[in-house]
Length: 139
Image (cartoon, rainbow, N blue to C red; front, side, top):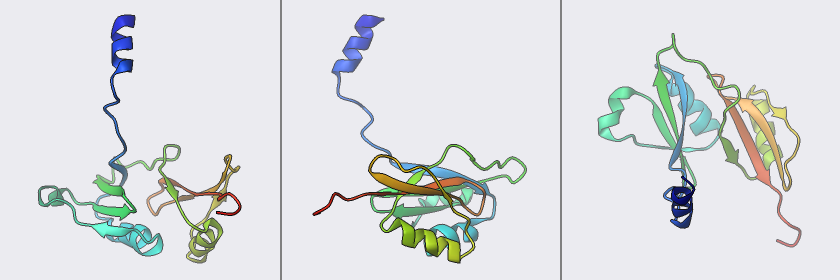
């Protein structure tokens, strides 16, 4: 077993990044997702592949990252209250004020080394983190 583990550790990693993050929402809530993630958060909606459109849902892009909102039967849907994506933003406080002005409740958390952050729930109850890295002076 140790020989196998050493051989694996010598290889280059197969995982090179994250292609997308998926959150669930109740079936038929694509418009709510568009309003929150697209209009309010400013993410760009991107087309789903034709073969996946029949499943419903909506996809977004922020920079080079993708967020997929997948539809789930409302009787089985449970929002994520602990597991969550963290979105990097510019001007965290301004963004927090924008969300608050639209009735989105925000919850501050202890800062991380070099970053400030807060949490919200999306319209479906999923936990989201918004984080801003502090820039070093002179940059």
